[in-house]
Image (cartoon, rainbow, N blue to C red; front, side, top):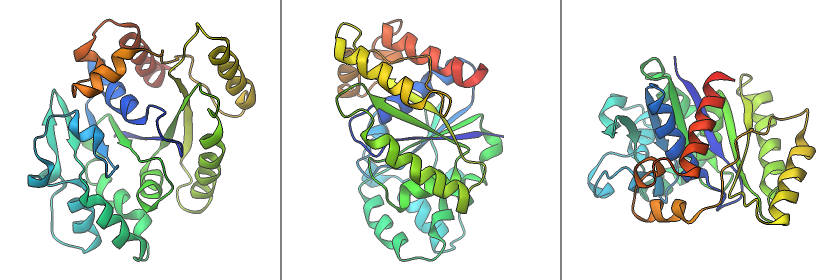
Length: 257
């Protein structure tokens, strides 16, 4: 039975999509069966899976619509396989679906109904989200066992964390009592600068004893941007690099610690 993990933060540009992609690749290398769900209308994760023109494929937006309108469907019809992993892709159509879902009673459980049909086929299901609090991200949290919070080590590193934690607590209390925080993952860490070191220490001290901060820190490197630009995972673009090793270590933390 799959462990469902949402990768989230209310702040943009903190490595959510990068982490979803590369954590999936590292978990796959540990022999795990992986499904990723792109729940961001920008579809940046989908582009990294080389699925072709998303206008011509079934996407998560179409899948949510099928469940919303109680159509007869099979989740497998919406799953694409690439590089020994599965993905339910996204497209800009998801924005229109999100608007429709806002007016539907009980729509926060739509994704849960879908995932429950396929949980037993995977070890991990990773959900990539947009940097906002909308009905799509609420769906992700309602369907998940845990949330992995990414945070960079910039000046505003902790801005989105507190807001997200409040949302997680509300959903845990009202809708999904099993939901927990998997941990805070610090990304774009540059140990060459005092500011990065200081902010890393600040986050660790702020949440010590309350929420786990992963031992693994994702280093700041141009290879991440280059890999995303070329539509590849770090595992493909720069295997054995410091950031590749970091995501391997993160996967081991999640699996074994």
